[in-house]
Image 1 (cartoon, rainbow, N blue to C red):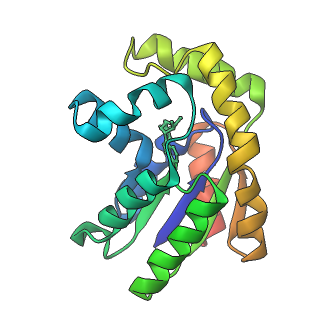
Image 2: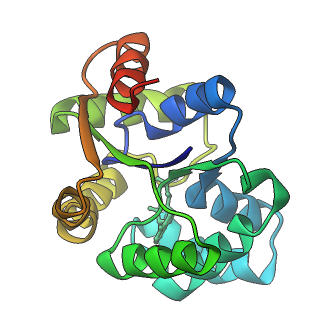
Length: 189
Ligand code: AMP
């Protein structure tokens, strides 16, 4: 199964991706995790993107398209994958369409996880408290910036995938297990 999880920071994409990964035996591809690993390892890519993540901006489409294109070629993606945090712009979505067409495969669904802004802020602030300083971008100022970037650059993907009849929307305000159940039911499995 080939899935995209779409939603603002704090909606629960990462949490649901991990549950679905176990349920369906397919990997979670998180561009945010890959970029944070590069930063932690101080690779040239990590050094290039650190300041961008810290201020809540998006890194360039070329960088994340390159990461995903390489990742999709790996053996573990043959049975499918769960994209978490990619695509985030229409240009990335178009690029993904081309990558998948080149491989002769297609997406099964795009799951939009919706939640209210106040709840997102609460969750992300809690995540920062629980994980200490693991994420430099999980503070209220940068979060507000990321939410703004989401509505400007990523929210247009909702219409993009609705047009392709791929969009399924679930209520991300519900408890984790209920969100998982809603996703499974939307997928019909
Ligand atoms: P995330 O863990 O998905 O919230 O991503 C954390 C940060 O990584 C974002 O705020 C961006 O700076 C960067 N990032 C992750 N995925 C993308 C993407 N698809 N396009 C551009 N920037 C990204």
